Each structure stands twice: as structure tokens, then as C-alpha cells.
Image 1 (tube, rainbow, N blue to C red):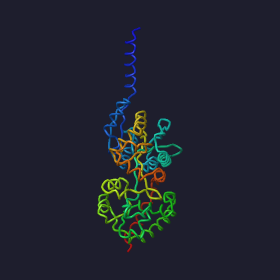
Image 2: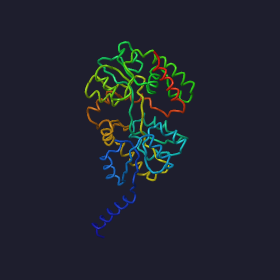
Image 3: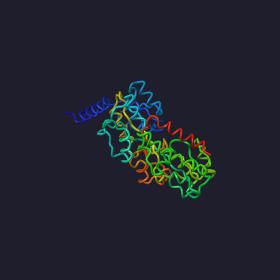
Image 4: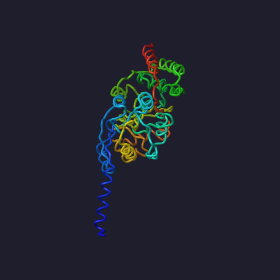
Amino acid sequence: MNFKYTCSALAIFAMSATAANAETLRLLTWGGYAPEAVIEKFEAETGHKVEVTKSNNEEMVAKLRATNGGGFDLIQPSQDRIAGAQEEFGIYKPLDLSKIDTSLFIDSMLEATKGNTMMDGKVFAVPHVWGTSGLVVNTKMAGSVKDYTDLCNADVAGKVSYRLKRPTLIGFAFAMGMDPFAAYGDADAYQGILDKVEAKLIECKANVKTYWDGGDEIKNLLRSGEVIASMAWDTGGWQLNADNADINFVAPASGALGWIDTFALPSRGRADEAAYAWINFVMQPEIAAMITSEAGNFTASKGGDAGVDDALKARYQTSFPQEAVDNIKWYPAVPAGLEALEGAVLDRVNAAQ
């Protein structure tokens, strides 16, 4: 037998087998979550092809509803868009966790997402990209601000800001020693929490320079020094820190409020093998760092912060030592009717003298 011919034949057979097993992954995701360089590496290493459609939470759910869970093979909704949509529309299918390398994930984020997306004992999502809201503080001028309610301290009077939005209600509730998420299933209990938060926010009004609406507005207020402590997002704090080392994002003592964009399988997806391969590929720390550089937010990849730009990595690690990561309060799905209760409270706070 010709050894050279045999090796060549085996190589051709192996390549043919890989091509035969290759799938096209139809990925429905957010901008920045699937950089072209990552796609190229994935395709080269796995043989699968990737087709990307960029979207947002509302559109993702709408697209799957319109097709009864078809048209895509992997989708990236936020974790609070899983259980409710599944219960109402049946647009996802459960994950086979044996096909996912769970050792690649930050444990607390993985467990939070599994818990928030579990139905009938089955898990419907795992975490990918995450971010938080908490405190952005000029630490030189407002060193006393360590938690949301510290925005009411006398030493920062007239120089604080936050939005009149639900994250402010949630954050103040946690800082006051209550657990609003645990009360989501009981409207009366939740209203009791809101009543206490309402009284605190009315008491705190004298401290507030302004209630901000947009990210550029609060960043400009912090840059100018008109505001020295605020509730705001982590990425905004890190952007400000690049220009002023005294300003940075601070994870509140009672916990930053976190969102997670996930990986979920549409109920009629047809390329599960490629979907699981993509999840395991992008959660590798070196690939996760590429996504962070593109998207600006970190991922749930364990050690994924190690390969990012040194300056951004330093800001992240200053804001989020491991205990702060483990203390993040992840948003669960909002039951019907609660946002109306919150809106009434925010209106009364706004109108109060």
C-alpha cells in the first residue's frame, strides 16, 4: 500500500467529514457582540459559518413570535426576557448544559442566569455580556458615598444626581435593607417597600442638583463638578475616569444592579451543534477580551478581563473586586402591574416640594 496516498486519502476524508458536519449559525444578537475578527476565527477553527443579524430585546422577541421560534439558531436576549416570553409564547427550547463548558463562566453569573431562566426544572439561558448601574463618584470630593442612600448625606448636599426611574427605587430599597426582588410576587409587599423608598427620596430632594435623563447629561455634570456623586452606569464611570482619575464607578455596598444578555436557543432553531460551539468558543478568555474591546462591556467569561486594554482592565478591577461581582443584584423578570406602581411613586416624588 502506498503510504503517501493513504495519508492523503485520510486527510481528504477528514476534511470532507468536517464539511459535511458544518452548519450555518444564524445568530440574532446585539451590536458589538460578534466582531468580524471573532467570526473569522470561529469559522476557521470549526468549519461552521455565521450569519449575524443585529437587534434589541423587543425586536428579538417579536421576531421569534412571528416565526413561532424559527428563523434563527442562537439568540441573545436579556435574562429578564426569557421566562415570561417562554411561558406566553413558547419561543425557546431548553439548553443541554452537558454541551456547554460551564467552567468558562463566572460562577455567580452562571447561577443567577440559570435560576432566573429556569422553568419546570429546565434551564433556558446562560450568561454572556453584562453591565451594571451603581454609583459614579468623585472620590476626592465625595468619599463618603459608598451606597445609594449616601447620596442623601449632608456633605454632598446640592451636588448629587440620579434618574427618576425604576433603578433608583430598586437601588434605594436594597440600601435601606430591603429586598424588592423578593417581593415581586406580592404586590402589597412591594407597595410597602415603595412607600418607604418614596419617603426617603422625598426627604433627599434637597440634596439633588438635578434629575438627569441622558448619559451625556450626567457625564457633563460630573466633568464640570456641578455633581460629585450620582447613580449611573459602569461604562460611563470608566469613560470619565479616563479623563479624571478622581472619578470612577463604585459598586454600592448593597450591590450594583446588573443586567445580563444571554445565550438562548430558539424553539425551532436547526443548527444546535454550531450554537453550542459558538457559546464555548466566545466564552474562552482570549475571545471574550476581543468582544469586550468591541462592545465596551465585560462578559461572564472567567478571566475574560485579563486580555483587555490595560487601562480598562484596571478600571474594571478597581470597581469590581470579586466580592462586588458576587454581590451584584441581577434584574429578574418584572411581573405585570409592578411598573405602574413604580410610576405612581416616581410621579409623587417628582411633584413633592
